[in-house]
Amino acid sequence: MASGIYPIIGYQDAPAMIEWLTRVFGFRRHTVIEGDNGLIAHAELTLGSDAIVMLGSIQNDTFGLRVPREIGAMTGGVYVAVDDARAHYEHARSENAEIIQELTDNGFGLRYTALDPEGQLWGFGDYRPAR
Image 1: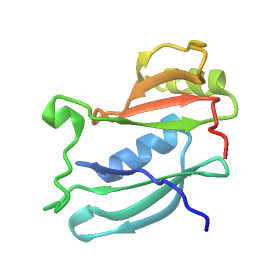
Image 2 (image 1 turned 45 degrees about the vertical axis):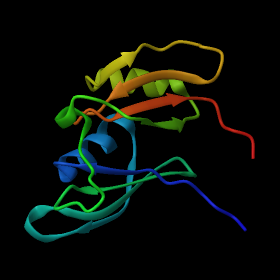
Image 3 (image 1 turned 180 degrees about the vertical axis):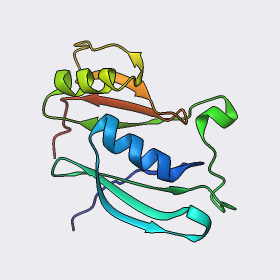
């Protein structure tokens, strides 16, 4: 049986974050389902051939989701394997992404980390776990 892991992120301003993630990190809109009052009920963004992240607007959330900037802490992040980490980093930097860890070769594939405007941690590198 095949399985996959797909991060789910709640955002206060999901429409703005979809625009930001596509412009700055190169994600593409796969599915965007709008809800009431300009909110996003569900969205799926892709990067490359196999990376998918799901997101939506935080609204009366039964999961208790909060954005990191709201609570002043991070409890995790999203790692994305990319084909050319240097080019990805240069593009994110040119779009004024908040880089937390500069481009480096740390020996285990994570090349750089950045925060999105709502404080979610994103890591990018060339490491792909073996299957």
